[in-house]
Length: 502
Image 1: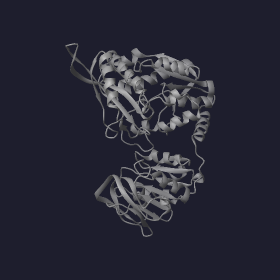
Image 2: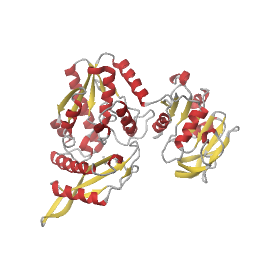
Image 3: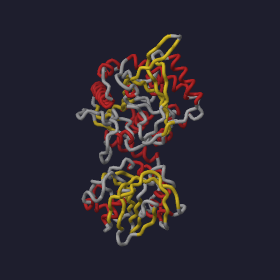
Image 4: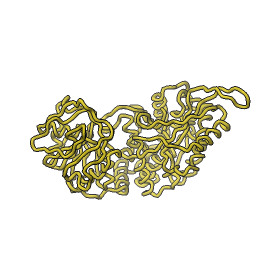
């Protein structure tokens, strides 16, 4: 296996993911891990992630044990600077910072076998290597950064990020490190992952009964399917109708899943809406919803009896944005099943998909032969329509948003590019808009349409929808949905925005 050492980068999981795409097994470890935390007998190589820190502001010697494991090391960004500093080089603050695309020129090295001499890479750094270790040589440079890659002994360093899609040949570089330098075995696959998770869940819970939080989306469905393979009918699915669902969602879930597992459907609309009454802050909404879910699951656990575990379909982007990764990072938003959970719970959490991205979950769904209707389903936030209503949540505003969202999703299925769209949905804004209908003045709500493309949910771009499509959807919404008299289209990417508005 390849160990990825996390120094707090938002891209650490992307590194592990690129390794898996090369069919090599990888695991992520905290930079504070000790030598005995890493299974050295299985270790074929080490990759050090980037990070927000500067190596000259803290003592880097506390990390020197990573270079004593007698395996090849690849340092990326901060990881490269750490390797240089610990081996006699010097890293300084750079007067010329480098962010975004840059043209890199490379020299002969096992890392760059089969690559052109010049290509585009993605930079994100404010520090630079000012002096190289004695035995090191420069193997890449840009116009701004003279030392963009280094090599000495079995240690390699890249100032740029090969793990992001913006770097040309990034996957080839990682593959060269794995195969040419580490001689890693290509034995990893999604089938392997499923088998490992089945064993892990079975070893964890034994013959005990387990609850699974079912949302009707692909994440919770795949988590339930994996757990069912592990413990069979001892898994009890709990689907909560919290009043924040899309149109006819409960009926669709009942039809699709009631034959696949023990499914309990809980009507909790009044309880959720009561707790959300008057709440405007999106973080508060998420925490209220997270606590309300857990209260219901704990109640159901008592009814089933002898239940200690709750399975959730948490994905890695949820973990990252909630600041709950291997090394804590900035909180972007508290996902209700990560940052929204209460500190004290009577149930232990099992998250089979915690280290995966959405498209990887779709791959597992295909391995498990789940219905295509689930595989192709667009992501839907755990807090539901509550975070697509900007401002207070009321039954009337939910009715308005639910009707508008249904029209958008219905019409979107007619688009040729529908499969390529990551998400397309409606957002109800806290704005009043003057309009005219039937020669009368109206003052109603504004609806925003959001449609994005993405690979993993970490970054996203807005979809260039046809103007005729937007015009048709706008007409339908303003004609059919009582309470909306204006429709706008969101043309912002992630970053700087998130996919959801709240």
